Each structure stands twice: as structure tokens, then as C-alpha cells.
Length: 82
Image (cartoon, rainbow, N blue to C red; front, side, top):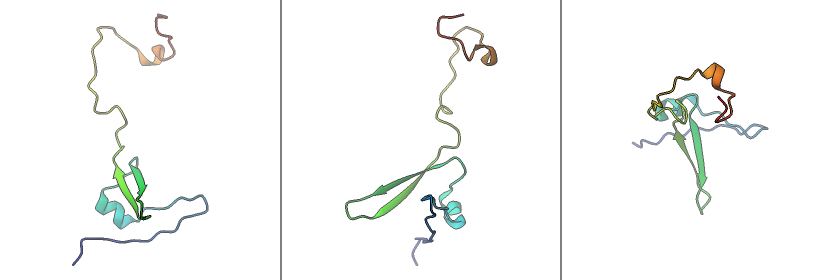
């Protein structure tokens, strides 16, 4: 018995597709994830799930600069313009 699962979807007028629920569950695809599409020399299409749920900077550690900041008041400041 094969571990491979196949599902079909239709490309709509805006070239969008829906990932079938069974595929989403097995692949662990959740809202916010990205799909990386590739085509090899023979024309075979592959899709890889790329987790993007937590943002581009979620794994960075905060750095203490020794200065207190207030994001609501400081967000429009020009560097050096305190």
C-alpha cells in the first residue's frame, strides 16, 4: 500500500486553487503558511509547505539597548530626531 495521497482541485478564473482539507491535515498546512511551487525540466510540478505562521522576526531574541521606547509615540521618529 502506498503512503501517497492524491487530490484534485480546479484552478479558478483568478488562477487560485484551494488546498484540499485532507492534504492540509496531513501536510500540517495552517493559515499563514506559504506554498513554494517548482517545476523541473520534465515539467513535473511540486509544492512544498513553508511555515510562516509566526512572522519573519519571531525567532529573533530582543536586544536591550538601554533606552526606553514607546512604540506608539516613537514609530514615526526619524533616526537621530529625538
